[in-house]
Length: 392
Image (tube, rainbow, N blue to C red; front, side, top):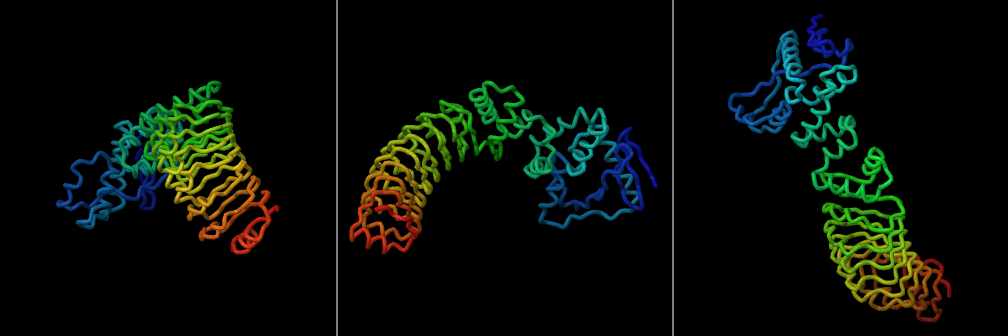
């Protein structure tokens, strides 16, 4: 057995023809690859690389020639690894100098066993490589859990772009006045989902909020917003600024009206506004041409705007437990409807044209004072869908 000591904590041994890294006297990882056989014609691929990882990615992506590992004697390979790790240590554990799948596990372990240089540089290397590295490096650091070594504030500041980080901090100051910094950061992290440095999901749970947080409108990449189970009385006009919004969950509040500007959220596919105090919908509501799911149960809606019947993509509609008195023939223009919930209203008659909704598979009109007459009875028999018990 041959051994090469790099410092008090890190050493390399050649055991039965295999090179192994030891940390604090304990075996930690095996070194498998060392040299690369790069043909002279491919050297140009490596002119602008900044790390060994980039070199490896260049090799993986090379289509011109097969680039493969050089077969060398175990002892020569051993001394090569020793040399690389020695240089790595002498340059402050700069993770650009050896492959990330070796550098970061070793550096993490060295930090755990008390290597002072590793303890100083580990977080710095994580932040530096995540900021400057390729997507492959970022995915590796995230999926292998290395970013958990950072504080929540460090983590958020690292993975979010400047505008989203600033907006998130403003949101925290706006809605979490009684939280200390640590608790605030933990709470915010649970509320969001991030992609490519931007927040695309924001779920603000029950906080008894009485006013809609204005800082939310700064999340321009937001696709899903949930602010259910609060005490909101209205949605601000600025909701239209969330141009990428696809899902809006505002149920279980005290909202009495929606702004007409919501009709400009053209990407909206789902709106959950159940358990509020809505009386009607905006006049231009029918402009939401991509809306597929609309949940309005447990409100005080008496009528729908004329534009409503232009919702050509609507598939699921719940108006249960409202004050709807009539179902106009215009309703039958929504040919995309698959499920329609109208129970617990004040409907007295069902329009005959409802049988023309060929996509309809479920209709619930129970607990309505539907008038029993030959037309309605025949109509209900014709509908080859599940109809809950009708109260005449």
